[in-house]
Figure (tube, rainbow, N blue to C red):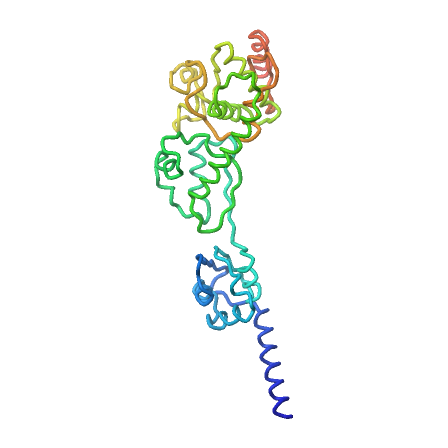
Length: 326
């Protein structure tokens, strides 16, 4: 009887110690530890990787905890961040849930491709596989050799696991723009003169740069559609600025408007040869569904909105009022 009691007490002590251990935060060499588990990694190797990441734990002890839990086969590959409050129990739960350490990068509506590249190259935790590629090489790596990159990536916030390739983020943004552009084109007003989704993308990118006020976008689209219909030049400053490139210092001069480039819509009729920015969903829809209007001109009111005019005289009066304060 004494022997049986001793065994029971010993087992109870082991169980109690084990219960306390799985609920006790593990000692960390640093404030946080990064753990990366590749697909196909065995349970014993997972335990070793945890210890190697900076968690002060015996790999064999962790291995047997995983095995005895009955959930060792449910552990998922991924990139994980372990905090100072991580216990053996919460560690296992994290690995079974696949609760990866996610980061995020945001591409902003109206940004240029160059600005998007800067943001992705600086994004925390992304593996830089495309950062040193030229624009042409990057598009080839994404399966679009020869395609101009401007405007081809949808502005949105993209989450990713730490250690993911930047090419994966680019691919998601590329496919997202394909999806939104196709959806907009399928809903286009059949009366518009645009001949292809690519032309719609170019126009949407101009609309995006012309205003940050979503409510004005369909009217701005109407102005450009009306001008295209009668062969009038678009005369939009953002295209000129885009054509000037990185040397633009923020001051658009008269000589800039008079200097011919492929993107100068003051000197050339029709749409420019490529998009000039990353247009969002509302700009894409505005490009293919312009508001019914006879307006041919618009001018900024100074409050983020625009004043629209059907005649040059009306426009000149609006310019005097809102730009010259007369």
